[in-house]
Length: 90
Length: 99
Image (cartoon, rainbow over all chains, first blue to last red; front, side, top):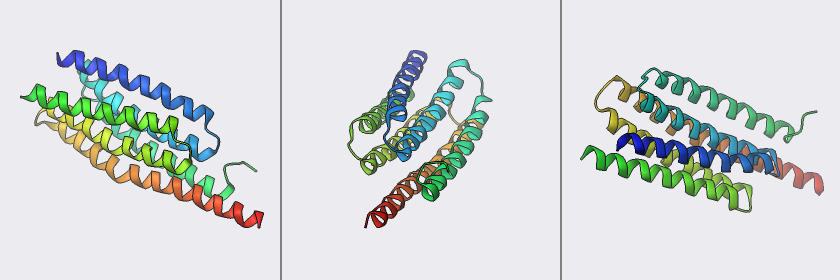
């Protein structure tokens, strides 16, 4: 029962990631794309932690920690870039 | 008991994720999209991680999940705030250039 619930939530999360990807491709400005990518990063964190419980591999949680750190740093840096240059490279 | 608690938490988390995604797709403006993305980032992630913590019980894995949860709750609102602030400042600069 719990296994089925975890697999269902994995499939549902991948569906919402695909829907977010539409906004990341289509988004009119750079900040729209950055928001969509940020949400996709959070969903990937949840997805990896659920997969670690399905496969019963406890060390995937360390991967989740590192992924959260890197995703935060990338998001801060790109927002700083948008503030300086307006999303267009010189 | 554990199963019922876990089902409630994980279905709540998936509900918030789907609502946030619909908001990101359908809202007309950048700031409204940021608003719905922040819901998705904080509450959905918290509920899903809480369900996994209930499933794993009192262990070291559960402690690591708590660490991830605290980190997400500190960093995700910060990132969302910085993105919206950057977009707002850029818009103000454009308005000044137009005048």
